[in-house]
Image (cartoon, rainbow, N blue to C red):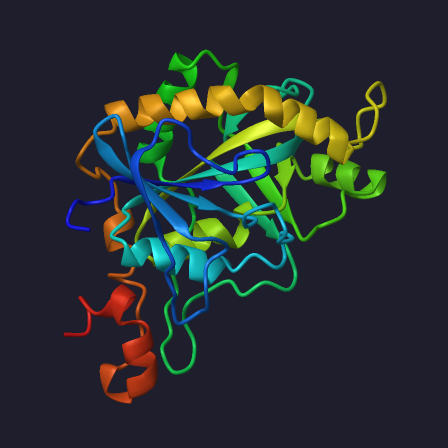
Length: 288
């Protein structure tokens, strides 16, 4: 595996594989945080090496709270991935973000409760900056690709992540609207934060499947409705990813690759050897 991996796609509900990948290989990787959701599929798309990972596992058997987020991001980092697109289903909390539209959010609100949110701890402390949780440079390129694929696209908005696996109550949905959240889903957190800790650019292609439960003229969200909309959007998502792979700029014109430079606060002399070894992939360049 000598070729660099230009881009990784983490597929959510409805996107369980990548069409168009050539010369594919499956990698059964492991990490200090366990095994990822599924084997990582590596292949060539538009002349670039692309990685694909099914977030919910093969056959969609992993709930949002059970996803091994740390293992997933660590596995992709170990393969040399520098950019990740997270494909997610979401509900809309705004009238103008209609089912079938694609949102590329610029903000994230973590409303989950029981998920490991960091690689750090056990004697090594890092305070990562996530004021802007999505890579603007990668989001720009993703927006161009989605528009070129013919999708009705919106750039910006706050993405609130709830624990799941249940959908919201009307009281919750209306509260999130009063907080000026734009879309709602179950998997963007802590995925985005872990990608930043791993110094990987991360952006989201969020597919609006429904109006959650706040919309008085629309039926409440159901799994059947979500899947129907996702099935319609799968081809569009695949085409947008193909265009992004084709047009991806080789340089990373952002600060994601140096996100840990000013985040590590622990004196190297007190870091336990086991922790330092465990996180060497992430911090080795800073603790030489």
